Amino acid sequence: MSSKQQHEVFHLATKKQLQHIKDGLHRISSQIWTCLGEESGNLYIRYDQYVEIFLVPKQLERHLRLIRDLKSIQHTGIYFGFLKGTEFQLSLEGAEYIFNTFFKTNKLRLKTVTTTIDGAKSFLYGNTLQTTDLSPSPESLNRKDVFFVLNPKSQFIGIGYVYKRDNRTELRNLVDYGYYIRRGY
Image (cartoon, rainbow, N blue to C red; front, side):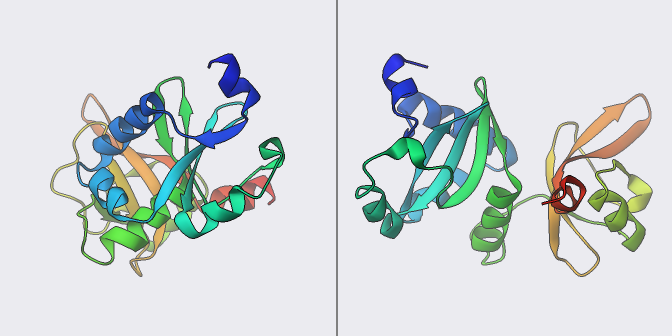
């Protein structure tokens, strides 16, 4: 991070940061970046433990210009994710935004998996799911694929990724709505 960026705690994402975000989203779906480009908003960066990313709608940006001390901004728009080094991690709020805005309106295809009732409960406790926790069990789960996890009512409850070792395949929990309950927020 440059000294200018350290001084500017909250600013528009740089070209390099945008590329890292684009690369991370591309691992989920090659269509997400294009869909985001069609929306009216920008990605902003806030420096904290990680480089936090916020999706800020254009109508909110005009209010940002009125704030003289951008260091005071803790959160605005949608918390979209963070950069850990050069690796982009999608947040729960960012995943929900993508799911509701693009997937549910058929603008985007995503890999989804539906859990059983017990699987949903287990996932919301932060646990890893086995293929028996999925209904129906997907025909193919490719290593490191990111899935949007749905409960039996087709409600979005989190995101996970496929982990394979030997003959065992599991869906590891990246983030879920139970996280807020477990953290006490």
